[in-house]
Amino acid sequence: MKVLGLDISSQCTGWAVISDGKLVKYGDIDISKYKIKDRIDDQMFSEYAGRIKELILLHKPNVVAVENVYVNTKVPSGKNIRTAQALFGMSAISRAIAFKVTNRPILTVFPSQVNALFGIGNPRRALRKPLIVKNINKLYKLKLLVEEDDIADAIGIAHVGYRTTQGLDVAKYF
Image 1 (cartoon, one colour):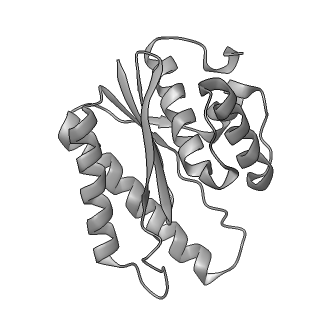
Image 2 (cartoon, one colour):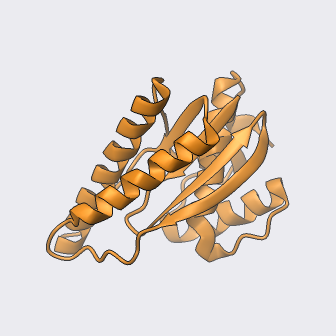
């Protein structure tokens, strides 16, 4: 069983492939050159779509697991709304391409499920990211930096996806 995990971000989407419980490959799709200003850039979406399709065709996953997109709507800022538009667009693109290429349903993974792997509860984002990186590094004997949290999240998402497909309890890994 091969799972591709995606941590969608408006700047840098992390991805990871877990096959038969082992981490095979990971990386990111960096689209930070596109600045989200007054409008969403169609070229950004096009490049992103192409990169997602390449990943799926290259790794041929049985399952694509995508993090549920969350945006804090309590922050009254135009930037937050544009970021939300970009995130929801990228999530839709990822899901549509994954379904079209694999012809299989897409697995939605919630951040709380990744947190549950390591028993860290539901801390704020600023506290959560370093904990996830630390625990992913420990679990897979990696040396990811805190700044590589998108990759760490993608690995966690793929890990949850794999455990889910195997009927294993996600909340009782350790």
